[in-house]
Image 1 (cartoon, rainbow, N blue to C red):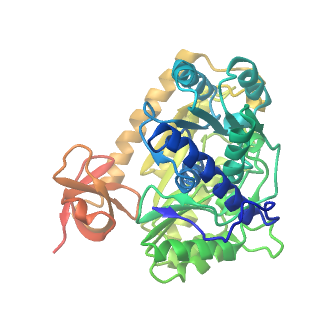
Image 2: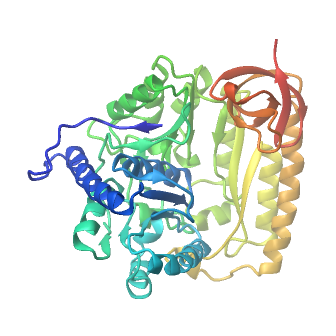
Image 3: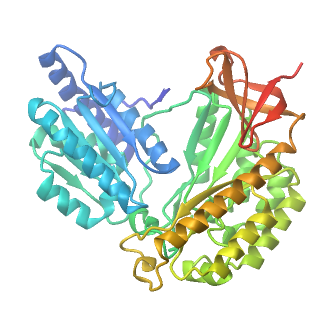
Length: 481
């Protein structure tokens, strides 16, 4: 679903000063270059955007796709595409190696097809040593840009067409937010919506604040306007995105809390469901819990990353809460939102983690009883304080702990999810089942999946479903009469 604005643009004149209008100016210029090359080849030019990493990157990729389609490219598989974009992640160092490997595979193709272009963007590009390596060892890459100036994509394409050279445009940081650019949504019925960018937390294991920059919030009216447009276009569910949505609004000229933003969004007619992520426990307010408790539209799911159950390790992680404070917060959430589904992230093997620390993590898993846990083995991330900490935990010890945690998580999750068996819940039907074309897959308010008999005509509908059988992390069900 391509969303776009209309501007009266004259590309024979100088580009406008307004950032959004300026980019539509370059979209029109790029369109002329693409059309000319397409005529020379006797076919449409094609593109493929490959996304690595988080939902923020996925949302950025929708914007890249929207701009490419607006300038005349047609989407195609990677092995056929004329323009290949890798939207990169750098949370773990092996992600960088994957990108270098994929680039190496493209070199012979690029040599045979002089009209082919390769673009790199995203978090990995914010690392100076990466850009230096690309400049020396991967000269056949055409466009390199980072996380702060993704809105300039069309302008960078024009620069590449006109200069016929590698274009590198990396910003160290920005306070700029450019609204109303084209984007191509993956789903017609649901959409991610960025409410803020960047992160101020500097957890000792995390590279994100260094590559995404400091927190900056979008104007609430711009967010409301975007969601209204999405709803008018058929969207019934939005996912509000930010590295830490709980700190939304603090840096605005007229500060507003995340809870207040949610109340404004809830008033939008036609919007059925509101989701958000990620929530940092240290910033989750009583006000937000109260709003969740009385809301008719906010989904009964909260992703609340704990990372470790040991207060000593949490301090080393620079998380700004203790195990006891986290458990108090969970108790408060469950009291106000009784049917909430809690999910979390846990890192196993953080530097200095002892068996006692790990048992504290197992204890918090048993006490909270999460519906689902994303488990990670700690890996050094160059450029973070944790990478140079002493007492790195031996690999075999970490593996043993990870396996024990996984077993506990699966056992508890199966028990927690089974309590809904036999109940009637509302599901948003999202797709035809990957395993059985006679079934469709829906997502419940608590974020769990249910598979029911149905066809693709049901996709995008909200349906009442009886959950007949719990299969651990998903359900089998049937339409409720």
